Image (cartoon, rainbow, N blue to C red; front, side, top):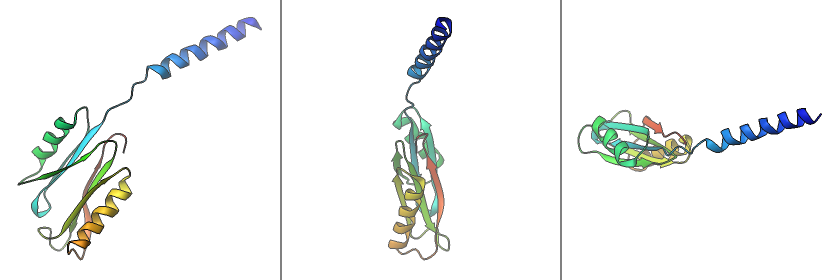
Length: 124
């Protein structure tokens, strides 16, 4: 019985060492939003600046950036006029980001707003 107890204790100790050794992932992401529906995105980058540069490299024109750190971001545009009304948002959950982006698109005059792009970093 003592041998079983020692084996069990070793298994518990090994499990604790494995779980304790797992590090927290620092994820950074960015949604870049440009004119006429242009966008770019990046996710799960180790640094925010690298994520920003990667998203801007994929976006054409004068693009704004929407950072997402352990979150999601979404871009909504008017499907009939992609150069017109649009909205974007970042939130902890994808559904929240999409709903907020669509609300802003409608608020700024969009009639048939749809999600054009979305992204989540590793924890979003």
